[in-house]
Length: 183
Ligand SMILES: [Zn+2]
Image 1 (cartoon, protein in one colour):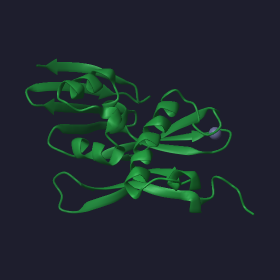
Image 2 (image 1 turned 90 degrees about the vertical axis):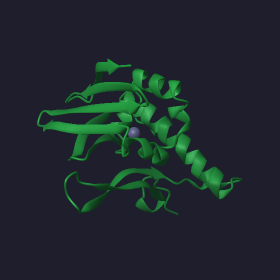
Image 3 (image 1 turned 180 degrees about the vertical axis):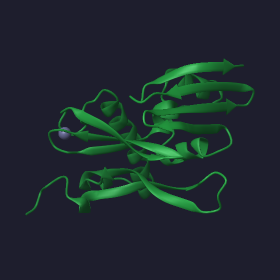
């Protein structure tokens, strides 16, 4: 019996997003993340509980690759980028087992401490918001991302929550820094 945990039939595409190109009428649909669907994920859970469990497991995987650690074998991950306007995806692939985690750059921005704190002040706990609901923020009016350069990569994100505005920059190494705030 084949037990290869990386076989494609055990993967589920958990998130795609139809994102309109600014200034254009057509839209595109891109894969933003994939995840494994182990049998144990469905044991003893209702359909909604299965969905909720993925919401948390995705963030856990993000926390691993945030530290360049593979969430499957703890090997080292290498980071590349894909995409462009309207959004860029960080591709984190393990050198050892090739496990790959795709993370939208908007998620990396969202988990900068100042952004987590700003959302918390507005009644939203980001760690309790699953990835697909997270897009309600990053594709909405409160979130404006502008890719200013692709090589080297540079983008600015402006987040407006009620009367507070945060401005952050993402560098080529995907590090995020706060560059402005207006309360
Ligand atoms: Zn690995």
